[in-house]
Image (tube, rainbow, N blue to C red; front, side, top):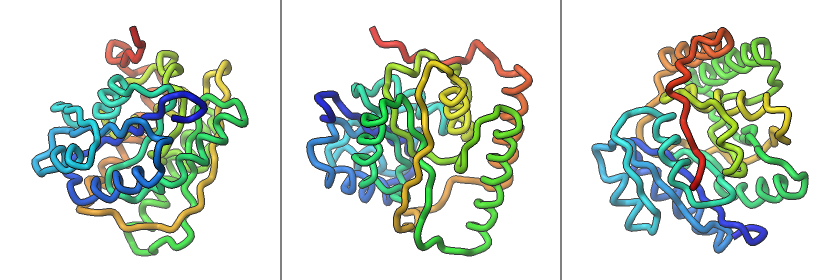
Length: 242
């Protein structure tokens, strides 16, 4: 628990049996501060769910494919007052969760997006394309939504669960990450912040599911659709708890 409140870590996964083990073990090293490790098995064809369960995680299943869809299912099922998120490929620094929770509490914030600052980035053609794509998407987000972020594509967030009902979250795919930040940073009633996290970079475990060109263009198109009001409002997720 953190400040007498439950903490859930939500991890969306598709075929991450290699990475999810390291991810869960890293989280377990944090001790009693984490009350629930919730893995969303997004129709995996490997042993992701089995490995996660054997390591003590709570596993929920979502058959409809999509990064955003997995998150919607996981966030709706999470029990924590505080939510932290990670990818299941062991690339994000789970050991930064306590620090982000402290910042959230000490600065009376509602939502934090972690800005990734690895100390030893592996420069190759793929990482250069990722950095360039992130910069294009982040700059577009600045222009269209006046959200001044440095890392618009980060998948590590810490926030209070009870703010989710304020958000119009529609994306079932990769744009969910940027949509969540747009909704959080544009709500005047919320206190939000982007917090840099310095960490040692780790190569992902298992093959990447990201198609740089396809997913990059999908994210870019989504930003314009959302700005122009072309999103289907009937797809807004409901996170209210009974």
